Length: 288
Image: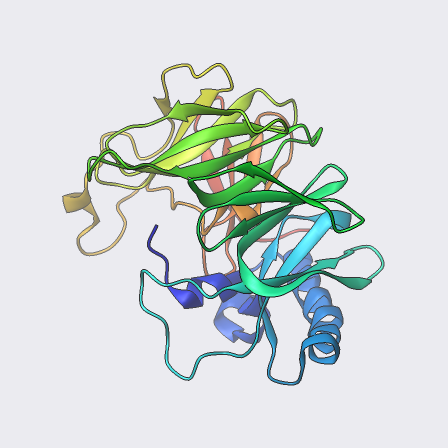
């Protein structure tokens, strides 16, 4: 999957941008600022003064942060990802602890009492509180998002069947069983699963415009939710009326209910999406 290095810093560093701060929900701005104030000094103490945390994974007590040894002098290419060490950040107390000190991971998410760690080769492992690890799955592309029960996670899977099927969306249980839920032409990615463990929302470019689709854990035929009837030619000159932006990543998503997903659309701007109706709107103000 192609991602700019700077895209990893969107939520973490948004508070440093005046324009982004102007668009952020005040509660989101407070959360980002608090995370930065607690994590930054802890990272410098544990990894040295050049180390920086560049990404947040998840929400609440089980939130994790990805750490780089130092910011590269030149921006990485679009097909490159920085390899990360992982720390855990308790959003309620501000406590920070090291989970994985090695700079070898792309992503991490808390799954029940364990931490799922995805390395640079697409190997997904579970690490317990005592540091023990077991291999869960291989060929995982990223976008890890656990169920509320911690009994499975959805992810983008790296496919090897040619350019028409670059990635798919699947669910992985804690026994390592992988089930493909969506595999359209091109890229299906950035999945999220509802709190009741049934509904799976993901992003696909199969119509040439990145749009939300919905399926379920049984693998029902995906249904397009947003940007219906649009194609890439309609984006020339700016987004058309009714365009719903895709999320920055699955790690900046949270469910308001079983039906409503809240996500970061970039630049610190959050949106809400009703996964039953496809109705979506920016969530720019008020308390949360």
